Image 1 (tube, rainbow, N blue to C red):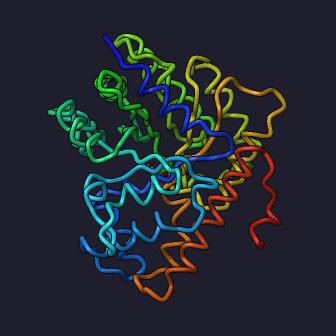
Image 2 (tube, helix red, strand yellow):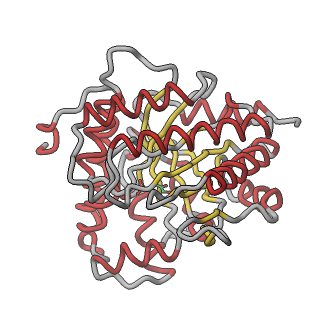
Length: 341
Ligand code: 13P
């Protein structure tokens, strides 16, 4: 494979800026529908535009955010004043990126499991996305924990798709974010999450190796190792951090420059506290440990906005505050007291 390392290196340098993370604002039409519905907002092209414009025009967001992941529609939308939304980000020093997968399909013959689609025409689409300003990409694979699942085959096929996607992105000078998400849905324990996450990451890096992906030019976006949402045994941030670090050290080569966690349905405060614990470990890991949160950056902002123009500023302040606290957590400098500031 010939890859244009110059472009990849430039994008990587911007996305690895210390103390900054990524804003995941790439919710698909179905996902944003659910989030909007919960706060009484109609899901239209215009409300989606207004909402993303609100997020991206948050004053000084670039203080704490260095990249934003967009949904394809957003990449092509313009602000009310007629500026392409990616330009709003660039003006803040934030690199625009794009979710390139096309969502999940049930995996035939494997009840309860899925495979992510979107490899068809990916190379061609990447060319178009680059023209529109996207410099990095994201592909999410989803692994469910349940009775008898995940199966080895579901893990293998999803790892293979992630690796094919990453190889195609690198070939086209688009930095790939590789996102294998082990879901927190269910009552599984911390130990089960650790075992499955380790198995998944091991398969993903094996597949990346087989597809000759340059690990130096990618970002890993994993779940933290946590008990399932309905598990009666809770875990402290220290326990989450310890289990997550053990798992990452066993599976992620030191060549990978950056790990940006997804929030996966954790509360905003929990996602920040867990990231802080990860960055408070005495022994420093070889990769940066930052954030690429969707819900854990946006929940308060969306609740504050509720689709009303008059709430715009307070929604933006909520986003800025979460970005600031997560930035502190990337340095191990977050304390719960900061939630009140
Ligand atoms: P959450 O942080 O809400 O899990 O979203 C991150 C993301 O990009 C999911 O694909």
